[in-house]
Length: 285
Image 1: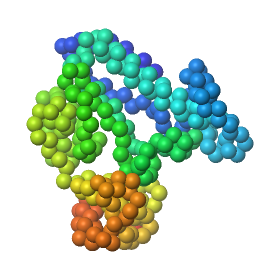
Image 2: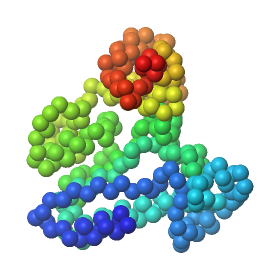
Image 3: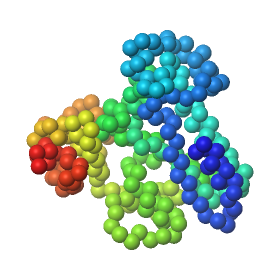
Image 4: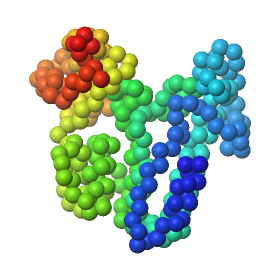
């Protein structure tokens, strides 16, 4: 329904009227469910997986709609999303809007493992460590593809950016000034090669589930703190992403000055909120 309404909306547009569409497809997502149609049956035959039964089915499937062949269904969900994206692009091209419409495809987190998800089978996080709900690269490094016919050249950009950069990017494209201090930086210079791209000094993340995590990326350095709501002063893990993008070798002991800098940034960036206590000392308040 989301997809069909989007297609309908695009076909009502004209080249003289700007528009914005945000399409939050839940494909694939935490519940591996979908119709048992031709696409599903294609992957059923391709994978020839053994159907889940009994406790295996109950523990790996959605509570209401158990899926005995989660590998086939997950692949069908990805295939369905691929088909939808193609139809969006086609509709924009057919309306003559392709040269004046920016299309962005991205995600909000890495692969998931619950309710039928199996990142190991699909190698969903590639070389990267971690999955959804981790602050290692496999949990937060996501695909980002930008397309605009005749305006964006084919290239791969290795400079990091974040989803909070989208807001100032869209404002600049719409000719609207950013009127207050925000964390995001417009990516227009990178997308359209219109000058020097301003870079983030560093990035900060925190996650409240799974005993609480914090992470910082500062240049090539990545710092992680685990179990921050159970341990008063957890150790800082440190990784050199240039040499070790898989985050295999913790080099904190060899780089005490960098660890000290990261500790200062953790202290600076975290904001206490009584409704969202994160750190161990905040849990006791």
